[in-house]
Image (tube, rainbow, N blue to C red; front, side):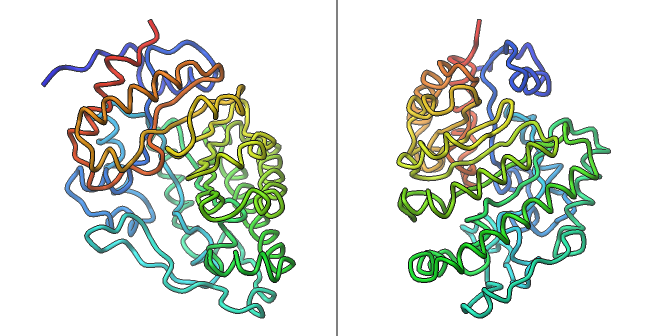
Length: 358
């Protein structure tokens, strides 16, 4: 097997340089590698998500990022944050192809329950005490870059009652959806306040997820009405708290939403991450002052041949490195847990061959 080119910067030095708009040795690579990292060290995907204090996840992430030369950004949170905290239930990923937690009982199933829903005390609710302990442990471990995983307001609404129901109510009961969105905004800001009161905000990025806002689910008109004002307000308030950077995962087919996303502040700089459906050159036009991240198609990493992975990674590098705000290579979404290790190595081989700045 060919050797990768020797790095001239540590992963922490590279990340700091990227966020400060300073020169880099090579393109940094970030992988959402929860399930993949677990299997990589001989554990299960369930081990990662069932250990909310994070010791298993910490080891899996540290060892896997070291093995492949990925950037270090430890995550605190879970994908359906808010479900347990507001009285619903989730299931851990136990099946052969399960990748993450899933909702088994929504907190809201009727309009009446939607109107009566109240937010909990975030300091005591659900697994948030465990996430706080995980954050403290990560801080003591010396981890340099931590990410507080928060849902977007539309995501929160979909976690409360299901995406099918929230879309139907958006058309027939818009006032109820706006109430859920306001609750989501308050929940997100309460969490952000709790963490900024407990830690130096310079240690944390806010990782904001928006898979349910894609045009595969809602129209640009719905995005403008139900998503834009709430996301914009949340981002403005989070940045005013002292957080410097928001990593915003703009998941899926979002091309028609990009003019609206461009109105939302991300930080100084922010990091805008895109699904493979969005061309990086097009994304660059809308986020000239932010770092863009992406967007190798996850299905190719899992199902493609190594030469396809190499070619697709090279195409992303060629487009992304031209972006004036900075570029971080990544997948269009999470690394498939069952991705062949050689394909992941091939992605890094393409970075070693094509991703240097000298």
